[in-house]
Length: 215
Image 1: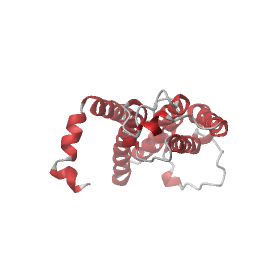
Image 2 (image 1 turned 90 degrees about the vertical axis):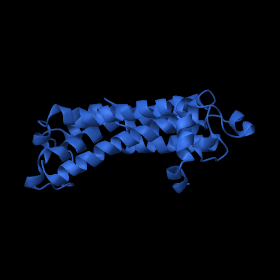
Image 3 (image 1 turned 180 degrees about the horizontal axis):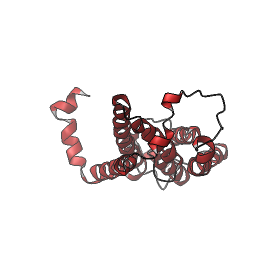
């Protein structure tokens, strides 16, 4: 998960430098062809962040939510619900970031947008090295780090006997296993459709009484 976050935030920094230190993604857009390498890295990082199947974020979030639900307590189920809702919201705003920054029509100063470019080889090589474990380390290291009987953490993390419910989490109802993934995919789809086809709805919401309260 550390590799994933490093990749994501270094990619964000690369974009900011590419557009003359502009940090408002509403003033970007159209960068897909201008910074193709950074675009690819950010797409992979976003997919891993939302817990897309077989990427690193999928294994970390999946286990945490299953263990929370597998406690079969009010606190555990409450944590599961919050985490699942968080998975939907993460997918929604990650897709919004990709669309507004790379796919939408350019919305910034012409001179800045046209002069955007991929970062230097030091940053791009670092991004490349970070994206590899962001994709692969979850699948290849999950058994070593969090697998049954693994002694990877040794005495670094102490877990009391009453909290050892890793086995129980494997036998929760299948619906609750796949719900976070389904909501993540729903968040991606709804965000993309809303920003591509529902821009008028967003404008009306912004200028409504509810939207003005958040300005």
